[in-house]
View 1 (tube, rainbow, N blue to C red):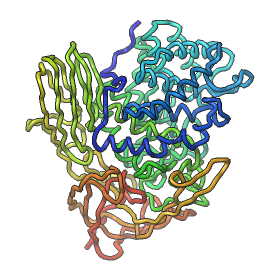
View 2: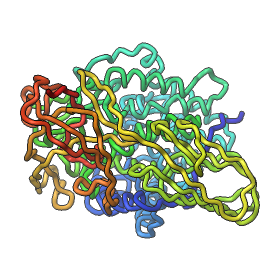
View 3: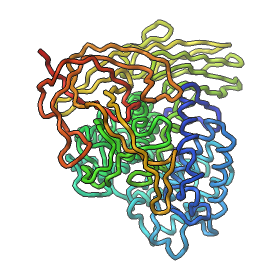
View 4: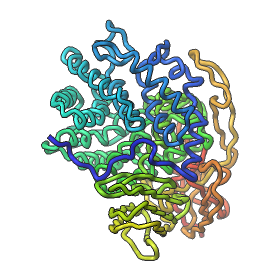
Length: 618
Protein backbone atom coordinates (compact mmCIF):
# COMPACT_ATOMS: atom_id res chain seq x y z
CA UNK A 1 0.00 0.00 0.00
CA UNK A 2 1.21 3.50 -0.83
CA UNK A 3 0.78 6.36 1.60
CA UNK A 4 -1.21 9.41 0.56
CA UNK A 5 0.85 11.95 -1.38
CA UNK A 6 1.39 15.49 -0.17
CA UNK A 7 1.73 18.83 -1.93
CA UNK A 8 5.33 19.27 -0.86
CA UNK A 9 7.95 17.69 1.36
CA UNK A 10 10.23 19.45 3.82
CA UNK A 11 13.86 20.04 2.91
CA UNK A 12 16.30 17.61 4.55
CA UNK A 13 19.86 18.06 5.75
CA UNK A 14 21.34 21.54 5.52
CA UNK A 15 20.09 22.54 2.08
CA UNK A 16 17.96 25.41 3.42
CA UNK A 17 19.68 28.33 5.13
CA UNK A 18 18.04 31.37 6.74
CA UNK A 19 19.29 34.85 5.89
CA UNK A 20 18.69 38.43 6.91
CA UNK A 21 16.37 39.22 9.79
CA UNK A 22 15.32 35.57 10.09
CA UNK A 23 18.87 34.41 10.69
CA UNK A 24 19.31 37.15 13.29
CA UNK A 25 16.16 35.95 15.05
CA UNK A 26 17.43 32.37 15.07
CA UNK A 27 20.81 33.53 16.39
CA UNK A 28 19.05 35.37 19.21
CA UNK A 29 17.28 32.14 20.10
CA UNK A 30 20.52 30.15 19.91
CA UNK A 31 22.26 32.63 22.22
CA UNK A 32 19.20 33.00 24.46
CA UNK A 33 17.13 30.83 26.73
CA UNK A 34 16.02 28.03 24.38
CA UNK A 35 19.50 27.62 22.91
CA UNK A 36 21.17 27.43 26.33
CA UNK A 37 18.97 25.20 28.49
CA UNK A 38 21.49 22.37 28.46
CA UNK A 39 23.97 24.70 30.16
CA UNK A 40 21.96 25.70 33.22
CA UNK A 41 18.41 24.28 33.49
CA UNK A 42 18.36 21.06 35.56
CA UNK A 43 15.50 19.47 33.59
CA UNK A 44 17.73 19.47 30.49
CA UNK A 45 21.25 19.72 31.91
CA UNK A 46 20.73 16.86 34.40
CA UNK A 47 17.92 15.00 32.64
CA UNK A 48 17.25 11.32 33.20
CA UNK A 49 17.39 11.00 29.40
CA UNK A 50 21.18 11.33 29.66
CA UNK A 51 21.57 9.43 32.93
CA UNK A 52 20.90 12.31 35.32
CA UNK A 53 18.40 12.63 38.14
CA UNK A 54 16.10 15.36 36.80
CA UNK A 55 12.89 15.00 34.77
CA UNK A 56 12.80 12.06 32.35
CA UNK A 57 9.65 12.62 30.40
CA UNK A 58 8.79 15.54 28.07
CA UNK A 59 11.43 18.21 28.75
CA UNK A 60 14.44 16.90 26.79
CA UNK A 61 12.40 15.70 23.77
CA UNK A 62 10.57 19.04 23.72
CA UNK A 63 13.89 20.89 23.81
CA UNK A 64 15.58 18.73 21.17
CA UNK A 65 12.63 19.17 18.82
CA UNK A 66 13.58 22.80 18.30
CA UNK A 67 17.28 22.66 19.15
CA UNK A 68 18.18 20.12 16.44
CA UNK A 69 16.55 22.16 13.68
CA UNK A 70 18.13 25.33 15.07
CA UNK A 71 21.62 23.84 15.10
CA UNK A 72 21.44 22.68 11.48
CA UNK A 73 19.74 25.81 10.16
CA UNK A 74 22.56 27.87 11.66
CA UNK A 75 25.18 25.23 10.75
CA UNK A 76 26.61 25.66 14.24
CA UNK A 77 29.20 22.99 15.07
CA UNK A 78 29.00 23.52 18.83
CA UNK A 79 25.20 23.19 18.86
CA UNK A 80 25.39 20.13 16.62
CA UNK A 81 27.83 18.49 19.05
CA UNK A 82 25.60 19.30 22.01
CA UNK A 83 22.56 17.81 20.28
CA UNK A 84 24.58 14.73 19.35
CA UNK A 85 25.49 14.16 23.00
CA UNK A 86 21.81 13.83 23.90
CA UNK A 87 20.91 11.66 20.93
CA UNK A 88 23.87 9.35 21.59
CA UNK A 89 22.75 8.94 25.20
CA UNK A 90 19.19 8.13 24.17
CA UNK A 91 20.38 5.41 21.78
CA UNK A 92 22.89 4.05 24.30
CA UNK A 93 20.25 3.77 27.03
CA UNK A 94 17.68 1.91 24.95
CA UNK A 95 16.87 -1.41 26.63
CA UNK A 96 17.36 -4.80 24.98
CA UNK A 97 13.59 -5.21 24.64
CA UNK A 98 13.27 -1.91 22.76
CA UNK A 99 12.03 0.30 25.62
CA UNK A 100 13.72 3.65 25.04
CA UNK A 101 12.33 6.04 27.66
CA UNK A 102 14.17 6.59 31.00
CA UNK A 103 11.90 4.52 33.21
CA UNK A 104 12.73 1.45 35.33
CA UNK A 105 10.95 -1.78 34.42
CA UNK A 106 8.86 -1.81 37.59
CA UNK A 107 7.37 1.60 36.77
CA UNK A 108 6.59 1.08 33.10
CA UNK A 109 2.90 0.34 33.69
CA UNK A 110 2.40 3.86 35.06
CA UNK A 111 4.64 5.65 32.55
CA UNK A 112 2.80 8.08 30.26
CA UNK A 113 3.65 7.11 26.69
CA UNK A 114 3.25 10.63 25.37
CA UNK A 115 7.01 11.06 25.73
CA UNK A 116 7.64 8.12 23.38
CA UNK A 117 5.43 9.68 20.72
CA UNK A 118 7.26 12.98 21.15
CA UNK A 119 10.66 11.25 21.05
CA UNK A 120 9.65 9.49 17.82
CA UNK A 121 8.93 12.92 16.32
CA UNK A 122 12.35 14.14 17.52
CA UNK A 123 14.27 11.14 16.17
CA UNK A 124 12.57 11.60 12.81
CA UNK A 125 13.76 15.24 12.84
CA UNK A 126 17.25 13.98 13.71
CA UNK A 127 17.21 11.55 10.79
CA UNK A 128 16.05 14.25 8.36
CA UNK A 129 18.94 16.46 9.44
CA UNK A 130 21.69 13.83 9.72
CA UNK A 131 20.66 10.61 7.97
CA UNK A 132 21.77 8.76 11.12
CA UNK A 133 21.37 5.00 10.36
CA UNK A 134 20.61 4.25 14.02
CA UNK A 135 17.23 5.96 13.90
CA UNK A 136 15.11 3.46 11.97
CA UNK A 137 16.26 0.34 13.91
CA UNK A 138 15.87 2.10 17.26
CA UNK A 139 12.37 3.31 16.43
CA UNK A 140 11.34 -0.08 15.02
CA UNK A 141 12.35 -1.75 18.26
CA UNK A 142 10.67 0.94 20.34
CA UNK A 143 7.43 0.56 18.41
CA UNK A 144 7.57 -3.24 18.64
CA UNK A 145 7.91 -2.88 22.38
CA UNK A 146 5.03 -0.40 22.40
CA UNK A 147 2.86 -2.92 20.57
CA UNK A 148 3.23 -5.43 23.39
CA UNK A 149 3.11 -2.76 26.09
CA UNK A 150 -0.27 -1.45 24.89
CA UNK A 151 -1.81 -4.92 25.10
CA UNK A 152 -1.46 -4.79 28.88
CA UNK A 153 -1.29 -1.04 29.45
CA UNK A 154 -3.68 0.94 27.27
CA UNK A 155 -2.94 4.58 26.64
CA UNK A 156 -3.91 7.04 29.34
CA UNK A 157 -3.55 10.69 30.31
CA UNK A 158 -1.37 12.71 27.91
CA UNK A 159 -0.58 9.73 25.70
CA UNK A 160 -4.28 9.15 25.15
CA UNK A 161 -4.78 12.75 24.03
CA UNK A 162 -1.52 13.18 22.06
CA UNK A 163 -1.37 9.80 20.35
CA UNK A 164 -1.02 11.27 16.83
CA UNK A 165 2.41 12.82 17.56
CA UNK A 166 4.05 9.46 16.87
CA UNK A 167 2.30 8.92 13.54
CA UNK A 168 4.75 11.01 11.49
CA UNK A 169 7.60 8.69 12.42
CA UNK A 170 5.36 5.64 11.95
CA UNK A 171 4.48 6.79 8.43
CA UNK A 172 8.15 7.33 7.59
CA UNK A 173 9.08 3.88 8.91
CA UNK A 174 6.33 2.29 6.87
CA UNK A 175 7.57 4.04 3.72
CA UNK A 176 11.08 2.76 4.49
CA UNK A 177 10.20 -0.82 5.47
CA UNK A 178 6.67 -1.61 4.16
CA UNK A 179 6.14 -3.55 7.41
CA UNK A 180 2.33 -3.98 7.69
CA UNK A 181 2.39 -4.30 11.48
CA UNK A 182 3.21 -0.59 11.67
CA UNK A 183 -0.19 0.23 10.19
CA UNK A 184 -1.83 -2.19 12.62
CA UNK A 185 -0.03 -0.46 15.48
CA UNK A 186 -1.21 2.94 14.27
CA UNK A 187 -4.78 1.65 14.30
CA UNK A 188 -4.40 0.20 17.80
CA UNK A 189 -3.03 3.52 19.06
CA UNK A 190 -6.01 5.34 17.56
CA UNK A 191 -8.50 2.91 19.07
CA UNK A 192 -7.05 3.47 22.54
CA UNK A 193 -7.11 7.22 22.21
CA UNK A 194 -9.57 10.03 22.75
CA UNK A 195 -12.17 10.46 20.00
CA UNK A 196 -11.46 13.98 18.79
CA UNK A 197 -13.60 13.71 15.62
CA UNK A 198 -16.69 13.18 17.78
CA UNK A 199 -15.71 16.12 19.97
CA UNK A 200 -15.30 18.37 16.96
CA UNK A 201 -18.54 17.22 15.36
CA UNK A 202 -20.47 17.89 18.59
CA UNK A 203 -18.52 20.85 19.96
CA UNK A 204 -19.57 21.45 23.59
CA UNK A 205 -17.03 24.08 24.66
CA UNK A 206 -18.80 27.31 23.84
CA UNK A 207 -17.74 29.19 26.96
CA UNK A 208 -14.73 29.57 29.21
CA UNK A 209 -13.63 26.36 30.90
CA UNK A 210 -14.53 26.15 34.58
CA UNK A 211 -12.22 23.26 35.41
CA UNK A 212 -9.13 21.57 34.02
CA UNK A 213 -9.73 18.75 31.52
CA UNK A 214 -7.64 17.04 28.87
CA UNK A 215 -10.38 17.65 26.31
CA UNK A 216 -10.31 21.43 26.74
CA UNK A 217 -6.54 21.72 27.15
CA UNK A 218 -5.29 24.41 24.77
CA UNK A 219 -2.00 22.68 23.88
CA UNK A 220 -3.79 19.43 23.10
CA UNK A 221 -6.13 21.39 20.83
CA UNK A 222 -3.21 23.13 19.11
CA UNK A 223 -1.59 19.77 18.44
CA UNK A 224 -4.71 17.88 17.42
CA UNK A 225 -5.36 20.23 14.48
CA UNK A 226 -3.06 17.99 12.40
CA UNK A 227 -4.07 14.63 13.89
CA UNK A 228 -6.49 13.45 11.22
CA UNK A 229 -4.05 14.58 8.54
CA UNK A 230 -1.46 12.15 9.94
CA UNK A 231 -4.00 9.35 10.23
CA UNK A 232 -5.20 10.02 6.68
CA UNK A 233 -1.64 9.69 5.41
CA UNK A 234 -1.29 6.26 7.02
CA UNK A 235 -4.74 5.11 5.94
CA UNK A 236 -5.53 6.70 2.56
CA UNK A 237 -8.23 4.10 2.00
CA UNK A 238 -10.27 5.53 4.90
CA UNK A 239 -12.89 8.24 4.55
CA UNK A 240 -10.90 10.50 6.88
CA UNK A 241 -10.55 14.08 5.65
CA UNK A 242 -7.74 15.57 7.68
CA UNK A 243 -8.17 19.10 6.34
CA UNK A 244 -11.93 19.17 6.89
CA UNK A 245 -11.37 18.06 10.48
CA UNK A 246 -8.81 20.83 11.00
CA UNK A 247 -11.05 23.46 9.44
CA UNK A 248 -14.01 22.47 11.61
CA UNK A 249 -11.93 22.40 14.79
CA UNK A 250 -10.46 25.83 14.06
CA UNK A 251 -13.88 27.24 13.21
CA UNK A 252 -15.21 26.07 16.60
CA UNK A 253 -12.23 27.46 18.47
CA UNK A 254 -12.31 30.82 16.69
CA UNK A 255 -16.07 31.19 17.08
CA UNK A 256 -15.98 30.88 20.86
CA UNK A 257 -12.36 31.36 21.99
CA UNK A 258 -10.68 33.59 19.43
CA UNK A 259 -7.80 35.99 19.87
CA UNK A 260 -7.11 38.85 17.49
CA UNK A 261 -3.85 37.22 16.35
CA UNK A 262 -5.63 34.20 14.87
CA UNK A 263 -4.79 32.11 17.93
CA UNK A 264 -7.33 30.80 20.44
CA UNK A 265 -7.32 31.35 24.18
CA UNK A 266 -6.35 28.81 26.82
CA UNK A 267 -5.03 29.11 30.35
CA UNK A 268 -4.56 26.08 30.38
CA UNK A 269 -8.02 25.29 29.02
CA UNK A 270 -10.16 27.20 26.52
CA UNK A 271 -10.99 30.60 27.98
CA UNK A 272 -13.50 32.55 25.90
CA UNK A 273 -12.74 35.62 23.80
CA UNK A 274 -11.86 38.34 26.30
CA UNK A 275 -8.84 40.33 25.07
CA UNK A 276 -7.39 40.09 28.59
CA UNK A 277 -7.59 36.32 28.84
CA UNK A 278 -4.56 35.15 26.87
CA UNK A 279 -3.15 31.82 25.78
CA UNK A 280 -0.29 29.46 26.51
CA UNK A 281 2.95 29.76 24.53
CA UNK A 282 3.12 25.98 24.04
CA UNK A 283 -0.22 26.16 22.25
CA UNK A 284 1.08 28.84 19.88
CA UNK A 285 4.08 26.82 18.69
CA UNK A 286 2.01 23.63 18.43
CA UNK A 287 -0.68 25.37 16.37
CA UNK A 288 2.09 26.73 14.15
CA UNK A 289 3.48 23.23 13.64
CA UNK A 290 0.01 21.93 12.77
CA UNK A 291 -0.45 24.67 10.20
CA UNK A 292 3.00 24.01 8.70
CA UNK A 293 2.02 20.37 8.22
CA UNK A 294 -1.33 21.29 6.69
CA UNK A 295 0.26 23.78 4.30
CA UNK A 296 2.78 21.17 3.14
CA UNK A 297 0.17 18.43 2.79
CA UNK A 298 -2.61 20.34 1.05
CA UNK A 299 -0.97 23.21 -0.82
CA UNK A 300 -3.84 25.43 0.27
CA UNK A 301 -2.36 28.88 0.77
CA UNK A 302 -4.73 29.83 3.59
CA UNK A 303 -2.69 27.65 5.96
CA UNK A 304 0.32 29.85 5.22
CA UNK A 305 -1.73 32.96 6.02
CA UNK A 306 -2.83 31.48 9.33
CA UNK A 307 0.70 30.37 10.13
CA UNK A 308 2.22 33.78 9.42
CA UNK A 309 -0.27 35.53 11.68
CA UNK A 310 0.81 33.35 14.60
CA UNK A 311 4.51 33.45 13.75
CA UNK A 312 4.80 37.22 13.30
CA UNK A 313 2.47 38.20 16.14
CA UNK A 314 1.62 35.66 18.82
CA UNK A 315 5.04 33.97 18.98
CA UNK A 316 7.27 37.05 19.36
CA UNK A 317 4.80 38.74 21.72
CA UNK A 318 5.28 35.96 24.27
CA UNK A 319 9.08 36.33 24.35
CA UNK A 320 11.42 39.19 25.14
CA UNK A 321 13.23 40.65 22.14
CA UNK A 322 16.54 39.06 23.23
CA UNK A 323 14.84 35.63 23.60
CA UNK A 324 16.05 35.20 27.19
CA UNK A 325 12.63 35.26 28.83
CA UNK A 326 9.14 34.14 27.89
CA UNK A 327 5.61 34.16 29.23
CA UNK A 328 3.41 31.18 29.94
CA UNK A 329 0.31 33.20 28.98
CA UNK A 330 0.26 36.32 26.82
CA UNK A 331 -2.83 38.46 26.23
CA UNK A 332 -4.09 40.69 23.43
CA UNK A 333 -4.64 43.56 25.87
CA UNK A 334 -1.80 43.32 28.39
CA UNK A 335 -1.53 46.35 30.70
CA UNK A 336 0.80 44.74 33.24
CA UNK A 337 2.74 41.55 33.84
CA UNK A 338 2.66 41.24 37.60
CA UNK A 339 2.22 38.60 40.25
CA UNK A 340 -1.57 38.41 40.46
CA UNK A 341 -2.78 37.42 43.96
CA UNK A 342 -6.20 36.46 42.55
CA UNK A 343 -5.61 35.28 38.96
CA UNK A 344 -8.43 35.50 36.42
CA UNK A 345 -7.15 32.37 34.71
CA UNK A 346 -8.97 29.05 34.80
CA UNK A 347 -6.18 26.98 36.32
CA UNK A 348 -2.92 28.89 35.97
CA UNK A 349 -1.12 30.41 38.93
CA UNK A 350 -0.34 33.99 39.86
CA UNK A 351 2.88 34.15 37.79
CA UNK A 352 1.46 32.95 34.48
CA UNK A 353 2.14 36.14 32.51
CA UNK A 354 5.45 37.15 34.05
CA UNK A 355 8.45 37.05 31.72
CA UNK A 356 10.98 34.56 33.03
CA UNK A 357 12.63 31.16 33.05
CA UNK A 358 9.63 28.95 33.72
CA UNK A 359 6.66 31.10 34.77
CA UNK A 360 3.78 28.92 36.01
CA UNK A 361 5.21 25.69 34.53
CA UNK A 362 8.29 24.56 32.64
CA UNK A 363 6.71 22.95 29.57
CA UNK A 364 6.89 26.19 27.56
CA UNK A 365 10.50 26.66 28.66
CA UNK A 366 11.39 23.41 26.91
CA UNK A 367 8.93 23.60 24.02
CA UNK A 368 8.80 27.17 22.76
CA UNK A 369 12.14 26.73 20.98
CA UNK A 370 10.52 24.80 18.13
CA UNK A 371 8.60 27.87 16.94
CA UNK A 372 11.16 29.86 14.93
CA UNK A 373 13.26 26.92 13.61
CA UNK A 374 10.27 25.01 12.29
CA UNK A 375 8.94 28.17 10.68
CA UNK A 376 12.29 28.74 8.95
CA UNK A 377 12.41 25.08 7.89
CA UNK A 378 9.02 25.54 6.22
CA UNK A 379 10.10 28.43 3.98
CA UNK A 380 10.68 26.10 1.01
CA UNK A 381 9.08 22.78 0.18
CA UNK A 382 10.01 20.36 -2.59
CA UNK A 383 7.47 18.73 -4.89
CA UNK A 384 7.60 16.50 -7.92
CA UNK A 385 9.69 18.64 -10.27
CA UNK A 386 8.76 21.74 -8.32
CA UNK A 387 10.30 24.17 -5.86
CA UNK A 388 7.72 25.67 -3.55
CA UNK A 389 8.18 28.99 -1.77
CA UNK A 390 5.65 28.31 0.97
CA UNK A 391 6.56 31.32 3.12
CA UNK A 392 8.14 34.60 2.06
CA UNK A 393 11.22 34.56 4.26
CA UNK A 394 14.85 35.57 3.65
CA UNK A 395 16.66 32.32 2.93
CA UNK A 396 18.68 30.28 0.44
CA UNK A 397 17.77 26.88 -0.95
CA UNK A 398 20.21 24.54 -2.68
CA UNK A 399 18.74 21.52 -4.42
CA UNK A 400 19.02 19.37 -7.54
CA UNK A 401 16.67 18.34 -10.35
CA UNK A 402 17.77 16.07 -13.21
CA UNK A 403 21.41 16.57 -12.31
CA UNK A 404 21.12 20.36 -12.43
CA UNK A 405 22.31 22.22 -9.33
CA UNK A 406 19.74 24.84 -8.37
CA UNK A 407 20.13 27.75 -5.97
CA UNK A 408 17.14 29.87 -5.02
CA UNK A 409 17.94 33.02 -3.02
CA UNK A 410 15.21 35.12 -1.41
CA UNK A 411 16.06 38.66 -0.36
CA UNK A 412 13.27 40.24 1.68
CA UNK A 413 12.41 42.09 4.85
CA UNK A 414 8.85 40.76 4.75
CA UNK A 415 6.67 40.95 6.90
CA UNK A 416 8.07 44.38 7.80
CA UNK A 417 8.29 45.32 4.11
CA UNK A 418 6.19 44.46 1.07
CA UNK A 419 8.76 43.31 -1.51
CA UNK A 420 10.87 40.23 -2.17
CA UNK A 421 13.44 39.33 -4.83
CA UNK A 422 13.89 35.71 -5.91
CA UNK A 423 17.16 34.88 -7.69
CA UNK A 424 17.22 31.42 -9.27
CA UNK A 425 20.53 30.10 -10.60
CA UNK A 426 20.85 26.74 -12.37
CA UNK A 427 24.02 24.93 -13.44
CA UNK A 428 22.43 23.74 -16.70
CA UNK A 429 19.06 24.17 -18.39
CA UNK A 430 16.33 22.36 -16.46
CA UNK A 431 12.53 22.38 -16.48
CA UNK A 432 10.64 22.70 -13.22
CA UNK A 433 7.82 24.67 -11.61
CA UNK A 434 8.51 27.48 -9.18
CA UNK A 435 5.49 27.97 -6.94
CA UNK A 436 5.35 31.16 -4.87
CA UNK A 437 2.68 31.59 -2.23
CA UNK A 438 1.09 35.03 -2.49
CA UNK A 439 -0.42 35.96 0.91
CA UNK A 440 -4.17 36.34 1.05
CA UNK A 441 -4.04 39.46 3.20
CA UNK A 442 -2.38 41.45 0.40
CA UNK A 443 -4.87 43.71 -1.38
CA UNK A 444 -2.93 43.20 -4.61
CA UNK A 445 0.29 41.62 -5.79
CA UNK A 446 2.52 41.60 -8.83
CA UNK A 447 5.58 39.74 -10.08
CA UNK A 448 7.86 41.69 -12.38
CA UNK A 449 5.13 44.29 -12.77
CA UNK A 450 2.40 41.84 -13.81
CA UNK A 451 -0.62 41.31 -11.49
CA UNK A 452 -0.95 37.91 -9.83
CA UNK A 453 -3.70 36.39 -7.71
CA UNK A 454 -3.47 36.77 -3.94
CA UNK A 455 -4.28 33.97 -1.51
CA UNK A 456 -2.89 31.27 -3.79
CA UNK A 457 0.30 29.80 -5.20
CA UNK A 458 1.55 31.52 -8.35
CA UNK A 459 3.14 28.90 -10.60
CA UNK A 460 5.93 29.65 -13.07
CA UNK A 461 6.51 26.68 -15.39
CA UNK A 462 9.51 26.96 -17.67
CA UNK A 463 12.92 25.69 -18.59
CA UNK A 464 15.30 27.70 -16.43
CA UNK A 465 18.71 28.74 -17.70
CA UNK A 466 21.55 30.68 -16.07
CA UNK A 467 20.31 33.22 -13.52
CA UNK A 468 16.78 34.59 -13.31
CA UNK A 469 15.57 37.35 -10.98
CA UNK A 470 11.90 37.75 -10.03
CA UNK A 471 10.60 40.79 -8.15
CA UNK A 472 7.50 40.35 -5.98
CA UNK A 473 5.53 43.43 -4.90
CA UNK A 474 2.68 43.20 -2.40
CA UNK A 475 0.17 45.91 -1.60
CA UNK A 476 -0.82 46.21 2.05
CA UNK A 477 -3.29 48.70 3.47
CA UNK A 478 -4.20 49.38 7.10
CA UNK A 479 -7.43 47.58 7.90
CA UNK A 480 -9.69 47.74 10.92
CA UNK A 481 -11.15 44.34 11.78
CA UNK A 482 -14.16 43.87 14.04
CA UNK A 483 -13.81 41.98 17.31
CA UNK A 484 -16.38 40.97 19.96
CA UNK A 485 -17.88 43.55 22.38
CA UNK A 486 -17.85 46.30 19.79
CA UNK A 487 -14.05 46.36 19.68
CA UNK A 488 -11.70 46.64 16.71
CA UNK A 489 -8.09 45.80 15.89
CA UNK A 490 -5.76 47.29 13.29
CA UNK A 491 -3.90 45.09 10.79
CA UNK A 492 -1.51 45.87 7.97
CA UNK A 493 -0.68 42.80 5.91
CA UNK A 494 0.43 39.96 8.22
CA UNK A 495 1.16 42.31 11.15
CA UNK A 496 -1.25 43.18 13.92
CA UNK A 497 -0.57 46.58 15.52
CA UNK A 498 -0.84 47.62 19.17
CA UNK A 499 -0.53 50.73 21.27
CA UNK A 500 2.63 50.12 23.33
CA UNK A 501 2.35 51.02 27.00
CA UNK A 502 5.50 52.52 28.53
CA UNK A 503 6.65 50.40 31.43
CA UNK A 504 9.28 49.74 34.04
CA UNK A 505 10.55 46.27 34.88
CA UNK A 506 11.44 44.71 38.20
CA UNK A 507 13.99 41.90 38.10
CA UNK A 508 13.65 38.87 40.40
CA UNK A 509 16.65 36.61 41.04
CA UNK A 510 16.01 33.67 43.37
CA UNK A 511 16.04 29.89 43.75
CA UNK A 512 12.99 27.63 43.93
CA UNK A 513 12.92 23.82 44.11
CA UNK A 514 16.61 23.71 43.32
CA UNK A 515 16.25 25.83 40.16
CA UNK A 516 18.17 29.09 40.17
CA UNK A 517 16.97 32.23 38.43
CA UNK A 518 19.72 34.72 37.80
CA UNK A 519 20.43 37.20 35.04
CA UNK A 520 19.96 36.70 32.13
CA UNK A 521 17.55 33.83 32.88
CA UNK A 522 15.75 35.49 35.78
CA UNK A 523 12.12 36.63 36.08
CA UNK A 524 10.64 40.06 35.41
CA UNK A 525 7.47 41.89 36.31
CA UNK A 526 6.36 44.81 34.14
CA UNK A 527 4.46 47.83 35.46
CA UNK A 528 2.74 50.42 33.28
CA UNK A 529 4.12 53.94 33.67
CA UNK A 530 1.63 55.76 31.43
CA UNK A 531 -2.13 55.65 30.73
CA UNK A 532 -3.38 52.66 28.77
CA UNK A 533 -7.13 53.35 28.54
CA UNK A 534 -7.44 54.44 24.92
CA UNK A 535 -9.84 54.11 22.01
CA UNK A 536 -9.44 54.70 18.30
CA UNK A 537 -10.73 58.18 17.43
CA UNK A 538 -10.58 57.90 13.66
CA UNK A 539 -9.43 55.77 10.75
CA UNK A 540 -6.92 58.14 9.15
CA UNK A 541 -3.81 55.93 9.44
CA UNK A 542 -0.28 56.96 8.41
CA UNK A 543 2.35 54.31 7.71
CA UNK A 544 6.04 54.90 8.38
CA UNK A 545 8.95 52.56 7.78
CA UNK A 546 12.12 52.52 9.88
CA UNK A 547 15.42 50.63 9.66
CA UNK A 548 15.25 47.01 10.74
CA UNK A 549 16.94 46.57 14.14
CA UNK A 550 19.37 43.81 15.09
CA UNK A 551 16.61 42.43 17.30
CA UNK A 552 13.74 42.21 14.78
CA UNK A 553 11.04 42.53 17.45
CA UNK A 554 12.64 45.17 19.67
CA UNK A 555 10.03 47.46 21.23
CA UNK A 556 12.20 50.57 21.07
CA UNK A 557 13.08 50.21 17.37
CA UNK A 558 10.03 48.94 15.48
CA UNK A 559 10.69 48.56 11.73
CA UNK A 560 7.23 49.82 10.79
CA UNK A 561 4.73 51.98 12.68
CA UNK A 562 1.20 53.26 12.20
CA UNK A 563 0.00 56.58 13.59
CA UNK A 564 -3.60 57.69 14.01
CA UNK A 565 -5.87 59.73 16.29
CA UNK A 566 -6.78 58.18 19.65
CA UNK A 567 -8.47 59.35 22.80
CA UNK A 568 -8.63 58.21 26.42
CA UNK A 569 -11.89 56.67 27.67
CA UNK A 570 -13.04 55.22 31.02
CA UNK A 571 -11.75 51.67 31.37
CA UNK A 572 -11.52 49.76 34.63
CA UNK A 573 -9.19 47.09 35.96
CA UNK A 574 -10.58 43.55 35.87
CA UNK A 575 -12.39 42.67 39.07
CA UNK A 576 -10.02 41.32 41.76
CA UNK A 577 -6.92 41.81 39.58
CA UNK A 578 -4.13 44.34 40.01
CA UNK A 579 -2.96 44.77 36.41
CA UNK A 580 -5.46 43.16 34.03
CA UNK A 581 -7.85 45.32 32.02
CA UNK A 582 -11.56 44.61 32.09
CA UNK A 583 -12.79 42.91 28.91
CA UNK A 584 -14.28 46.18 27.65
CA UNK A 585 -14.36 49.86 28.62
CA UNK A 586 -16.77 51.29 31.18
CA UNK A 587 -17.91 53.97 28.76
CA UNK A 588 -17.24 55.30 25.26
CA UNK A 589 -17.26 58.89 26.44
CA UNK A 590 -13.93 60.54 25.57
CA UNK A 591 -11.75 61.84 28.39
CA UNK A 592 -9.65 64.75 27.21
CA UNK A 593 -8.41 65.78 23.81
CA UNK A 594 -7.66 63.62 20.81
CA UNK A 595 -3.98 62.61 20.60
CA UNK A 596 -1.91 61.37 17.68
CA UNK A 597 -0.54 58.03 18.86
CA UNK A 598 1.92 55.57 17.32
CA UNK A 599 1.15 51.87 17.10
CA UNK A 600 3.87 49.25 16.65
CA UNK A 601 3.77 45.54 15.70
CA UNK A 602 2.01 43.41 18.32
CA UNK A 603 5.01 41.08 18.44
CA UNK A 604 7.31 43.95 19.44
CA UNK A 605 5.35 44.98 22.54
CA UNK A 606 5.75 44.02 26.18
CA UNK A 607 2.67 45.84 27.50
CA UNK A 608 -0.01 46.84 25.00
CA UNK A 609 -3.57 47.67 24.11
CA UNK A 610 -4.72 46.01 20.89
CA UNK A 611 -8.48 45.50 20.97
CA UNK A 612 -10.13 48.89 21.45
CA UNK A 613 -13.40 50.53 20.41
CA UNK A 614 -13.72 53.19 17.72
CA UNK A 615 -15.40 56.25 19.24
CA UNK A 616 -16.84 59.40 17.76
CA UNK A 617 -15.26 62.62 18.91
CA UNK A 618 -17.11 65.93 18.52
